[in-house]
Image 1 (spheres, one colour):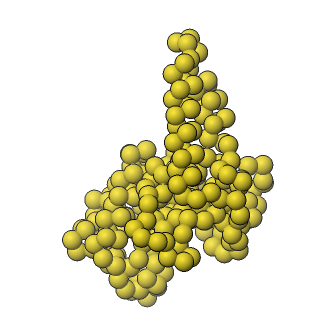
Image 2: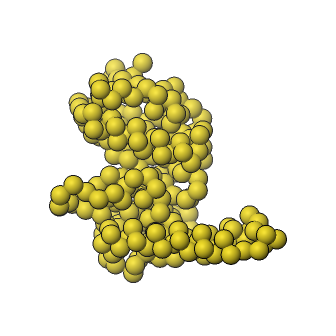
Amino acid sequence: MTVLHLADEGEAADLAAFLSRLLHYDRGAAVRLQAAGTALAVFGRPPSFEVLAIRAVRLAKPYEDGLDVTLDVTVSAGELLESIDESAATAVVPAAVTGPPWAGVLPPRGGWRREAGLPAQEAVRASVAEAVAEFRSRTGELAPEQRNRAELDRIGREIWSRPVGDTALPVRAAHAAQSLGFLRPTRGRPVEGQETALFSSGAWLRLRTPYGSIAVRRAGLGALDVSVR
């Protein structure tokens, strides 16, 4: 049995909240865990948004399991959530599962450069709220015979594929960040290097916030610059 010792109760609570939100969208969700040193990365894919969500978790001590100094495994999100003991700030790594296809293709580890054009976090949240309101309004106006999956998907694709500000980031990525709790206001002024920002590496874009990141493939680019691990 592998036990992860998280940095504190807050880290345990944030991890539990992230897993709960993933399970809200997919009761059978899986997550890929990668740990090295005192950092744990948790990757998930909420199906409604077609993005990868990454939650970074601080560990109390460097990960070590026998002679292994790194952890890389895909597990059930529900089983991992059930194993979290917030008061003790621990989590038990469940048995590995056969990972979904997305778990084998992750964004690159390095080569990220900052992109300009991302609005302030308040404006990003406002763009998500406007998109949600427009989707509800337009779908609510449909006649009963038009209210089918194909038409709802068409309207959704049109709205959620729009860019955020002067960037190539689709609104659906910002919507995913908000829905997973990544775009909530920070307490006090953001620490330098941890503020909400947009980065790119090859075909990937990554919206980074103090609470997690959303990675998405840029439209129109081929299957290049991916990391298969």
